[in-house]
Image (cartoon, rainbow, N blue to C red):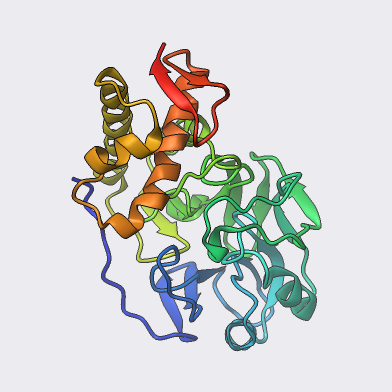
Length: 300
């Protein structure tokens, strides 16, 4: 069982000081993929004139924009960072950056917009374009803080997490969330890339994870191990269904997700598809005629 954390003291638009170097403002955009809403983080001491970084400004919402501008009033915003280009993270970056006079930094957006999940929040912001493209490994400095860009593809091909070195903390975006597992939806989502990124996060030994949605994860080691184990168990279950003779994803879902509301089965199908694509690339499964969601699948 994953030890989910879901309790969050919430008031939309309120600025909360959540650590010595971190403040948070939550947007009023709750939903099945955003939980209570998008949490925008402000990194820095907040002293007048001091440089701060802002992570994931969020959806295009005038009320949230006003709350963010009030939170950084009298401070210099040196960087606007975006974990990935989905619509619940990226659209407000440009209006906010223009209002405060700061550049937008993020990984390069996908070459083509992807609309595979059926959830608007998980679609790409087709207009998003960073001023500075990050590849991972870059370091950014401010007043009392150092942020390292950490490439974490999987949930999205351009997902970038951000390490706050002074607190050994990771702003994990949607890569790891405390309230739910992350959605990995092909073609832009990639389960093999996700698992490799997860291993990289585990190896760093962070003390705290700050997801964009939901409360922090304050005991990352057991949480991440459970997260990893959950994915590996699902992979084993998919292989077992292939061994039992299931050939299509639709045949597997009623068994794999018997305890889940059938209304969620379409989303579950996308996750199973991601696992099967990873298995096909690893030579453990075959798809005919190609690894599409409606393919016929067999064990390799």
